[in-house]
Amino acid sequence: MPAVPDVTVVIPTRFRPDLVIRAVRSALAQTHPALEVIVVVDGPDDDTRDALAAVSDARLRVMVLAEKGGAPNARNVGARAATGSWTAYLDDDDEWLPEKVATQLALAATASVRTPIVASRLINRTPRADSVMPRRLPVPGEPLSEYLTVRRGLFYGDGFIQTSTIMAPTELFRRVPFTVGLRRQQELDWTLRALQQPGTELYFAAEPLVLWHQDENRDRISLHMPWEEQLEWLRRSRALFTPRAYAAFTMSVLGSMAATTRSRTVFREILAEARGHGRPRAIDYLTFLQIWLLPPGLRHRVRDVVLGRRRSADPVDVR
Image (cartoon, rainbow, N blue to C red; front, side, top):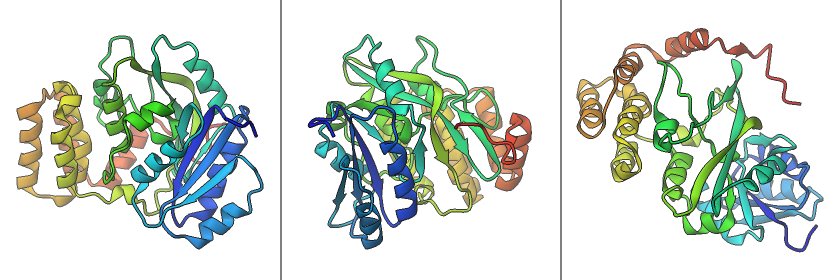
C-alpha cells in the first residue's frame, strides 16, 4: 500500500456484516489501487468487526465508534481520519464498479475549478427493475437545485445525486461536513451547501459507476422520518433552492412523505408552503395530486409502465 494513498474510501455501517463486506470488496477491487478504505462502524458491533477482521488487505482500516451517531456523523469521522487528498463515500449496501475511482479522477483532472465535486450515474437495482439514474446530466447554466429537484414528468425526476457516487477533495468534506441528525436528503443537503463554497462545481461522469441496491422489502432507516422534520429542514435550507426548485421539492418529495397522513390539513399546509415560498408549475400540481390520490402500490405500477423500466428478468449488464 502506498504510504499516502491519494483516495480515501469511507464506508459507514452498523449491523450489516454481509453487506459491508460486499461494499468493501468492491472498493478494494478498483482498478485504481492507490487508495485506503476506512469502515466506520457506527457503535459496538462484534459481528461486523469480526467479519472485517477476516479481510486480508492492508488498505483496509476499521474504526469502531463508542456509540451510535448516525451515518452522517460516521462519514464525518471517516473524512477527518482520511489520509487521501480525495475522499469518496460508499454506503454499506451499495457496490462500486471497478473503474469508478479511476474514471472520476480522470474527470476531476479536467476540472477548471479548484474544488470539483465529482459524481456519476448509477444502476438503480430493485427486485422489480433496473434503471440508470440520473436520466440526464445538468446542462450549462442550469441551477443545480433545479436539476436535482424539478420534474419533467409525473413519476420521476431527471436529475439525481446519491452518496455512493460522490467524490471530492477531502478538505471540502472537512470544511462542509454532513449534517448530523438528518435522516433523509443527506446527499442533497450536502451537495447544495458544498456548492456555495468558492471555486466549487459539480461534475458528472456520464457512465454508471455504482450499483445502488434498492431491496424494496428491506427496512431502511432513511425511510423513517416524519414529514414535519423534513419540512423543518426544508425551511432552514430555503436559501439553497430557487423558487422553482423549492416548489418542486415541496410538492413531490415532501408531498410523498406527508401523503401517508391522508390529512386534509397537512395537504393544505404542504400546498401553502410551496405556493408561499416557491413557484409551482402545472407539472408540480399534477404530481402533488397524483401522490395524494393514488395508493403507493398503484402509483409504482403506473410509473413502471409509463417509464418502460426493464423487468428484473432483463437486468442492466454492468459486468
